[in-house]
Amino acid sequence: MVDSGLLLIDKPEGPSSAQVVHRVKVLLRAKKVGHLGTLDPFASGLLLLGINEGTKVADIFLSAPKSYRGVMVLGVETDSQDATGTILQVLPRRHGLGSGDRFPGRHRHYSPSATAAGHGKNRA
Image 1 (spheres, rainbow, N blue to C red):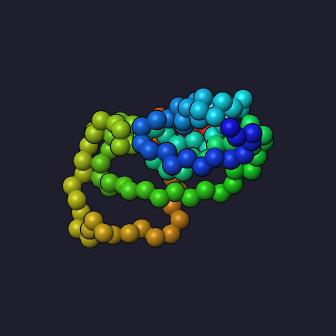
Image 2: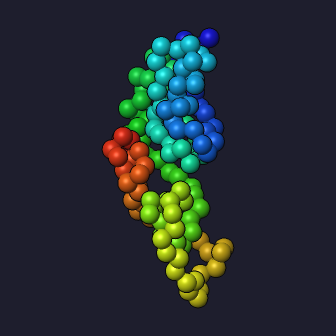
């Protein structure tokens, strides 16, 4: 089918990046398929795949700056530090923060230990 290149996948919530890689490898009958950055199973978004010779550009994408968009719930603590965990605590809502409030600017994100990044499997 395809000799080599890059494939952009709109990954839904559910499958892991490795499951998507395996499925594409089988469908395209490719020798090598690899993701150029991983998404957790409960995350949806753009998953870049290198096919055969396309895997040689992986380092360019893995070391490139990335940006993410997401939704957060303030005041809820889970045992996994993400939406998949068991709720441990819900803090009361404080005055001044509404559902439409925004937090513009740069914010540092620390990955929960249960993610691929937290386990050192993701160089991104």
